[in-house]
Image (tube, rainbow, N blue to C red; front, side, top):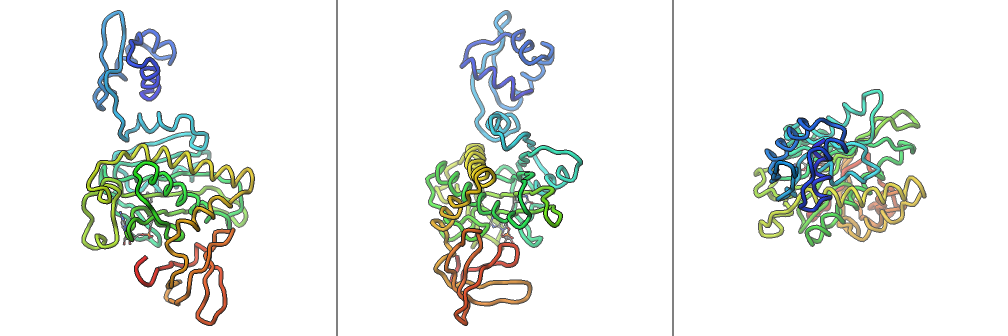
Length: 327
Ligand code: BTX
């Protein structure tokens, strides 16, 4: 309701909207309107009220909160619902619990902080309060489970574009799930699947972006960076990046689902790849082997040349790939 009220106030561009008009349009009592206006005020929006005139938006909040998130994504058809938390264990965990329900809509879960953010293979993902984008998209795709890894590449391309548009920072993609700036990780992607043999029940696309982080824990400070650190501590708007990401991701997703066209995603990933044309180490369980990264094929697999000269397609789920000399 708060998002709808903001929508009406913004549409008036600084003019007054009467309480009666709001209550009629949104089908709530005038007392409720007044309560929601007060909630919005406590969230930082300056709204003046004058008897017989109504309410007027004096100054806006442009940062990430529940109202802004819903407002920013109100026209997005991929995301039917948005949930915003101040703190949560893990947005991927929350998405899974929604996905395990009998009926759910595709939704976006965003939290200001994660207390148990996770990376791949149960690794920890540091998710400081207010400093980053910690979010999960819960999707119900109608394609075979073995195509699910494509979602990770779509997300990497969409987030890389979103970051570049909003900040002007040049990003690179470390196949398949990291975005890197100046050799350091700024974003990680964790795609999780709940599926039967030939049917996806749901897919959770988890994304973490270090946006305004100023300092990292000692264990990761050599390999992690934030967008703000890359711009001399300039403050960066998380909401704009989320909005751009969802817009770009939706285009890639629809191209693939409706037109079976995955080429734009592959082309973007190839162009931005920091993995290709490098010696890499392929880690699968306890085994490690050296190879040379040649290409990303049209299915999104990494094609490597082994030391015996044979070519091999590395499938996302199987392995970790590390550049031998850093990224
Ligand atoms: P990953 O396994 O590739 O990367 C995890 C590794 O990255 C850690 O072991 C650590 O070395 C390093 N690391 C931890 N925190 C950070 C950080 N903030 N920035 C840079 N490096 C870090 C990558 O896994 C996938 C991460 C997905 C995170 C999102 S956040 C929203 C969603 N919810 C959730 O629990 N996970 C996802």
